[in-house]
Structures are given as structure tokens and as C-alpha cells.
Length: 170
Image (cartoon, rainbow, N blue to C red; front, side, top):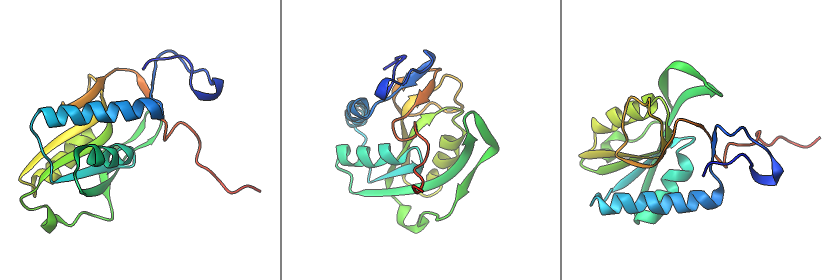
């Protein structure tokens, strides 16, 4: 949904793609349906932390997948600021548990695509099959995810990251 207004009357530039929590619910169901329609039944959903955590959990529920894991990757350090390359952070996955499984890697956006490419390559070393799912894919991404809810070249405002972190009152 593209809009110039956000919650509580906040006005945003028109070049933003704004995702609300309500629209996120619709997006998850539609994305899960595309996975199911493709005949892909993952044994495990891997959420790329942090942005992929909401999607990973929601997709696992929508697909009926019980096993969910996370892989922590740091790439963005601020708005449009990133490290030279994505870096995998601890804790790491138990790679022995990945042997022979079909994994679905979930992330919020394939912007440059470098994070998704790194995680996909790491998972492919251990899993029987790996596919990727994102809410948004940008046209300049170095990877084309297997499952995409929407494609955009706009900056995306997600409901879980559109406000400053909560701090102690005082």
C-alpha cells in the first residue's frame, strides 16, 4: 500500500511504501499461498534477524511448519547506511540439524539482496533444498527471491521499525 499518511496522522514523503500491521497480515497469507501453490513444503523456516523475524514466524504458522530458526545478520547500520558486506552474528544455527531438510528463508526485504544471498548460500551448504521468501524485493537486488509479495523501488516503512526504540522513563 503506497500512501502519504501513516498512523496517528504522521505524514510521510510519497516515495515511501508503508506497510501497516493489518496489511502485513494480508501479505503473509498471500505470500504463504504462493509458497503452497508452488508445491513447496518447508520442514523449517529460517527468519533472518531482525527484519525477517515477524515474517518468519507468521509464515511458519500460515504454512503449518513447526520448526523455526533464526540467523542473525548485520548489514544495515542506519537508514541507507550499511557495512561493506553482511556479517553473520552469533548465536549460529546447529548445522547438523539442517541436514536433509527443506528450508524456507524469510526476510522483510531483498534490497541489495546481499544478506539474502549470503544466508541462502550458507543454508545450501547444509540443507537438501533452500528457497527464499520476502515481503518486498527491489529491482536492484543481486538475487531474485523465490517468493515475493510485492516489488518496489521505494523506501519501505515497516510497522515494527517505524518508531524509535523504547527507553526507560525518567
